[in-house]
Image 1 (cartoon, rainbow, N blue to C red):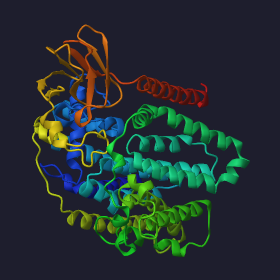
Image 2 (cartoon, helix red, strand yellow):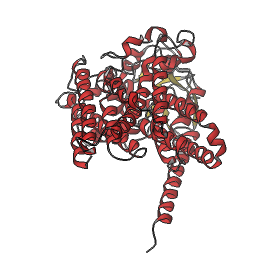
Image 3 (cartoon, one colour):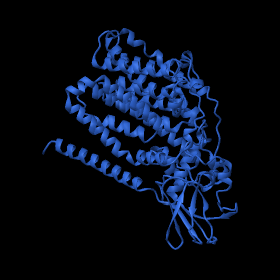
Image 4 (cartoon, rainbow, N blue to C red):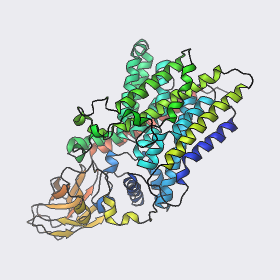
Length: 541
């Protein structure tokens, strides 16, 4: 199959996936407002010269919400930069979604290319992945930005696992980049990917024990990933250890949200759809089991196990307390799609090799297989997009300047446990609260606020910041003051100690700063090592 044919089919696939984006309004989705708010919070930070704030102060009218602390923003900086440059909310988000669709196609194609020869398998894998029903539902029905951005890196993980299990693990960067990308996009998908990796390690444990070099590479890869991403997960764990948050009060009933097995195959949300399973048919004609076929079978087995775990066959009711953070059992479909795309692409490639060369050429048989995949997945994608009931809306550039709109944090999992009245968080954001119930207006400046004219006898002041570890308080004379998170409705409580004016800002913690340096040094070290190996391996003149 020539490059021109691959290019045409790639363009058709991407165009079909992007069809809902061809509108002047913004696509909808269950979580759209939260993610648009996240983007504008990052934009606000960029414009204020503080692009990497962990507590985003646009939320709740300035009270702040640690969205970036607990919900990684790795890819969201693309639309945030566009917003900072003047692009509208609708356009910047559509560019971002289109980028994700193109990145998903590219990731699946490149990952399969490292596993197989030729262009048929990579093209089929990319088409199936890009037009996969759950992936499109995540984008256009749920607007689950964290989940669908994490899915972009799952093909790299699968390619890395094949290299680990069946080859010499000469490309550990595949597994490393894949896991790092997932960690920096979505924590729940990270847990699913870890389950997948641990299962693969257990399967090949004998081979790893017989090959110390592989085991050492795997450990070093894991260490590099952990260090490179430590700027995200270390501060998150620090916050979770230091305070109580509302994620502990889960309102999701896993037993109620479980799937019926028959619903998995329907064109509905949540579901996998029937199209992706139709493409498993070539497996029936394959008898020889090469390493590639064995890997595809493992992917297929893992996919079906994940599918079964979304149903009542898994004891969700008994494990409600332990697994409530998953929220919906059908989240596991985020992993099944890439697994099936990998397996089916390998089966189709092997099946094509069995076709007789007459009356057509191998080129023609490859084209026939790829066209069949494109037709099946395109029909499925158009049906998926057609039943989407999310309405379009045009957001003005100053949409989030209206304070009540800045409190849309869905379940508010990362609100302090004491923040029980969301409405008053926004309405009272301009004011500090005194012990006698009096409200005093504060002066805000980027990620800080100040308050003057206080009575020197005041025992405490509840300032309009939600409490997260890392806040600092001082008198206007520069003397440090004590604070904690015991303020009313989750606020920071400052103890003036006789000061007539106070200054409060979020400066972060020592661990946050240390983890940032660890990540930077790790990244520089990995890049330097890669550059050195490339120079060393280059032929001498």
